[in-house]
Length: 447
Image (tube, rainbow, N blue to C red; front, side, top):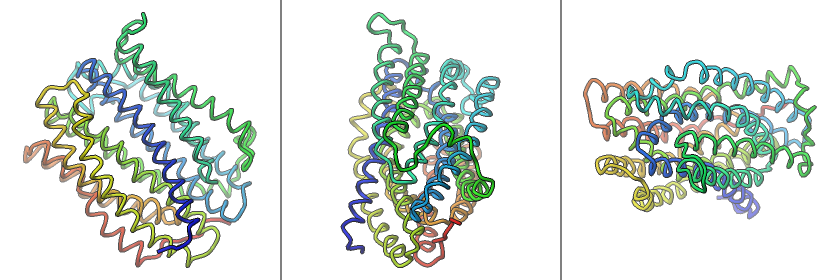
């Protein structure tokens, strides 16, 4: 175990900030779910269907930003910031191109997209109403994620928490006003929820731009920084980012397909899964924040070139991951009942959501080890291809075919299908442990 107090201080400070950012960001979704769940179950299901598209999009943007963190952290470990600006510019151009494609699909094929997640026309109509407004958030979200990823590569993480808090307050205030029609405002239902999210995204980006212009002095970013790219660094960036993008896209599609499978099983399963998965994602923030902190520290340490320290850090982090996983599983088990009581659900839907959550408590323990080990230590250390191969085999070779078979051929209950859909979070612990302790994954990516 590492005895250097500075390591623990850096790790836990970074982790806590990133966890809080994730919690606040997901609390926006939780607030949406609770408010819409109190408005009507149809509204909740319609927005839940749209959120599957949102989730895939957010996974793509997160991956594009993560490529900056992996490569940029190593350059920052060498005290070189010039390459980071050029890498960020390449990422911004790519993110905006992807955003344009998804925006056009949401604009011209909304019914086709939503019918993949449910065959209930009432839910689809409700989802299309929400999508008409929410699609305009794509531009602002893309730019914000790239800028935050650039800052995170040099260890600047506090601003992300501040922006998430701001978004939470703005979104909740507008939702409360426009969903139900309080304070003399019109009652807009799902459109009101979309307006709240859009307003939060716009103001979030504006505040971030002001912060970079006035307070950020490590990278000295400006508008001109994103006009200049470097062919060699762009090639290096795509070499690092594309495996991450493939994994994140597959993970997003995997989650969307999970909801599609459940949504075509019973009319209640999609609402129950929306409620359960929102709580699960909230507590899963511990694992996500831990993985992000590990990636930043590991990337910087590999960039410094001290391989003994890299190995010592990886061993210490694994112990911390297990402890965090146990605490996360217990936390989800404790909070599930109080949060479920906030929803206006039918008794059968509430019972199904509670059963889903009990299973996810166990899943969370194993996920909290394998995710930070794979995406934090191994990928942060420079080996993104291993994660890509592992996910291709586990998700698309095992989980999705097995879940599809159980849902539509065996006709198993949604409870059994949920177990199948999350099985990879358990068995991926084994290859993660073997790779990080006995394999080669620390790779210098800088020139």
